[in-house]
Image (cartoon, rainbow, N blue to C red; front, side):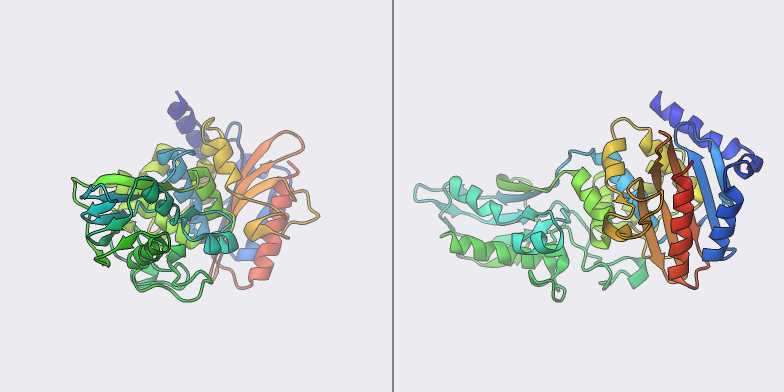
Length: 411
């Protein structure tokens, strides 16, 4: 029944005539501001989230470069497929046996699960505000009675492929993302101060854990290397990420590219047959279609210009998520609050939109986007998508977007 209702809402967005948008309050002014901020290669759609009724639009069906509005689709798919409470595991396995003296006769395997928040408290408390403490594994290992490891500690990052970037950087490391890995540590940085990227994130994670274990009195005699864990290996310890709803918020509010791309690969690994960007993009596309929406996804963050959707498709996604009883709250709360948080802190201040709209921004050269949901004093929830693809002044684009959002918040 829920799927049928979502599809009916999507059809309503397509079927209503353009004249309905012209009848909306201030619609003509919105259109003018859209072109003023983003040129003629820009699109707009404003709809009532309760029934999908179109309130205003301009070229709403034409796909455009999304920039970081792509993250709206990535995080929606992650919440929808994994669930808001899901926590990503990082596991410590062994193929050996523990003797009476606490010596593990075998090897340890640090198996990455694709957790973007894995790291050290010194890093994530400073830069992220949330994280998964890799060093929590040592307490569990000691509690299991391990005092020495006769073999090696192996890093296993095979949940993902080893392409470190996305199409925008030729799949090499991008300075706007950092090196992607199924066993990342501190978002791919080589130090807790955030200076420079690690050449091999998985090996860095294993070395950091080995050092932590030594300090805790657990010696690893064979050192650190790389190898996949055998199927027979058994779990000795595990740490789990913050809940997916928290990871989605940490992705959308500051527009974190590393988190978005890691989530995309994780979707591919779990639901797309491979831990790759391409497999994850296909999962996101399928999820969007199931919501009566659509996207041409190339990556998860929006850095690649070929990530494209129309304002109508963005609006359909927003409406479907807002009307989903299980996902509405975690999804809406993952978006930045106008004038208050993240990439829109200070924007829309003093306007009707301040503190009332949950939004996602997007910026590339010549591209600026603002899409989201406004919770109005009238009790109405209004979804809107502004996709500007002819921007020559980012300051002007933001100014006009903010004024459009203020008008949306007054419906």
